[in-house]
Amino acid sequence: MKLAIVTGASKGLGASIAEQLLDAGLGVFTLSRTKNKRLEEKSRQSTKIYKHFTCNLASVNDIEQTMLQMIVSGHNLNISTIYLFNNAAVIKPIANAGSINHSDLIHHTQVNFNAPVMITNMLLKQAKVPCQIINISSSAGERPLQGWSIYNSMKAAINMFTKTVALEQKSAGTDHKIISFNPGIMDTPMQETIRSSTREAFHDLERFKSYKEKGLLQSPDKVASALLNLCLHEEMISGHIYDISDL
Ligand SMILES: NC(=O)c1ccc[n+]([C@@H]2O[C@H](COP(=O)([O-])OP(=O)(O)OC[C@H]3O[C@@H](n4cnc5c(N)ncnc54)[C@H](OP(=O)(O)O)[C@@H]3O)[C@@H](O)[C@H]2O)c1
Image (cartoon, rainbow, N blue to C red; front, side, top):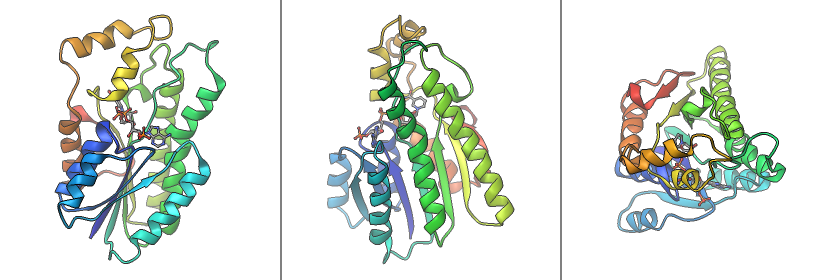
């Protein structure tokens, strides 16, 4: 069977990805601080393999323990391929340099960069089957926005991590693939957090508010569907930074 690990599946894009993976017949392990009741209900009503692991990605110990628990849980599943969706992320701190809170900075870099790197690292170390790693990135990884210097920087970092690991795996002759994916702007709780910031902290606040007012935010279900079509039915180009507009 094919197994997918999805971080941040309690809401937003991760919830849509996990639900559609279950519908497509994959086993799904999710990882976040809170549970997704809809996914739990759905898996209870079927024979599908679904397990949630409560994990705070801000904690290195939580990440390491959770990955070990996942290995134990996956032991008897006869897995042929593992998909890893490094989706969980935070947007805060939204602040100009000079006003960045250092605790928020450390939390952000841990959740948005260190955590996906650690999970990828542990997976590649342990995996005995081909892995397809999908890092959810953002156009913010390529284009600066005033007030988002930390989010911009960590998305740029995850894109460079993706490209570098792809080269390493190619040189090593493995079957593992890794991509980044920019989902575009979506109607999720992260956008609510963005709209609740201030013009002083975030230069483009009015533009982001207008995306919601004008109905320009994409549904996460639609974005997940396009992404899963690429991952499950097409050949992913390892090291590529995909954009929703290309799919
Ligand atoms: N929304 C957009 O317009 C947009 C645009 C471009 C890129 N993206 C990217 O798309 C991805 C999904 O974004 P989204 O909008 O769906 O975000 P979201 O609605 O804010 O959901 C974020 C998910 O990350 C999890 N998470 C956050 N902190 C965590 C922690 N410390 N430990 C474990 N899990 C944690 C949350 O779970 P818990 O709170 O339960 O822990 C939640 O499931 C992110 O990588 C984001 O950067 C989003």
